[in-house]
Length: 251
Image (cartoon, rainbow, N blue to C red; front, side, top):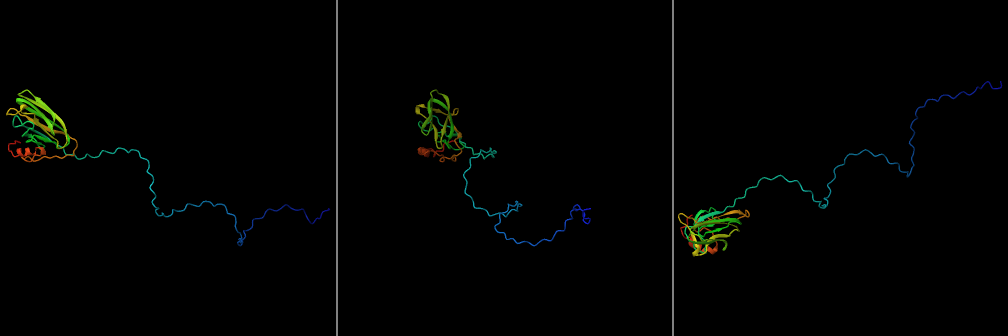
């Protein structure tokens, strides 16, 4: 045999051995780094707690006016208001003597009603207490001569009537708009046509009343009944002084 008998052939490699134990941590190395490159951004952290409320800031300037809003819904009906006091005025009176004086307001001293005192029976003049619409009427007996008469407002005739037949009766009604202080009366034309008559069987009367006022603002003068306490215009003052001294007025 040509080979050396003391050394055999190489065997196959052995199995890997087990891991050894972890060695001890080495000492921290020294870092002599300068101006290193920035690292990559870190992940966002968790949300922190709310901070304390800050101080109130200064008041800002007023902004421009906004556009007009839409119309709102209709509100509920409110409670009923207090009633306004009623304005009342009415009178009715008759003559006590036939054939009245011409060209002068006819006296109607026999008062049927004149609660508010707006009619002066001695003078035969009604004075409007308030601006409004009024109705006047008369029912007249005519005897012994014809009758021509008119309804006057502040010296101007508003209605004229003629009754040539006698004995008879005549009636008429007139509606007028008056302002406070206007005066209304009746008068006959002359002594040839003043056949207005009264006796125990006949009555000649003059009446009027307020239909409705223009407004509730008014001044109402209602004098107490007495000989010298009726209110009339200055143009009749002297005549009133005379007739108010008489005691023959029937009310």
